[in-house]
Length: 128
Ligand code: HEM
Image (tube, rainbow, N blue to C red; front, top):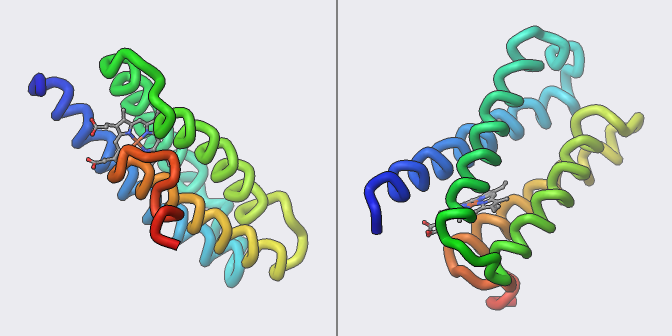
């Protein structure tokens, strides 16, 4: 495997880890202290990290040269994750809806990681 591919893959995985950490922290704040979500860095840093995540993902996908089924599944699940994440962090009024959306977003995130690791659109669902 080419070293630039490996380097970008490491960048992608690092962005995945930081993005998850920032999402969990913001999810906790959305439930217990929403006023913290308004801080300037909270509105900027996650966007920078998520842009890196997506840009590296697209670069890797282009290098692979074919949209395999696990990649399509990741893209579809990413859209679901974004929707649930938005519900968890801002769009829903009640804490209950935010909590359920947060749990569902984290399950979707786990599915995306498992689809990436197994290179299968089933991901961890194959073990159920
Ligand atoms: C929240 C969203 C995402 C997460 C959590 C995620 C997670 C991961 C992880 C953990 C790996 C490393 C897998 C391994 O080395 O075994 C990986 C690799 C990869 N991801 Fe993502 N990813 C996300 C979004 C995407 C998207 C949207 C695409 C496609 C456009 C994508 C394309 C790739 C590719 C091509 C690789 C490299 C596969 C390889 O060569 O081993 N990722 N991803």
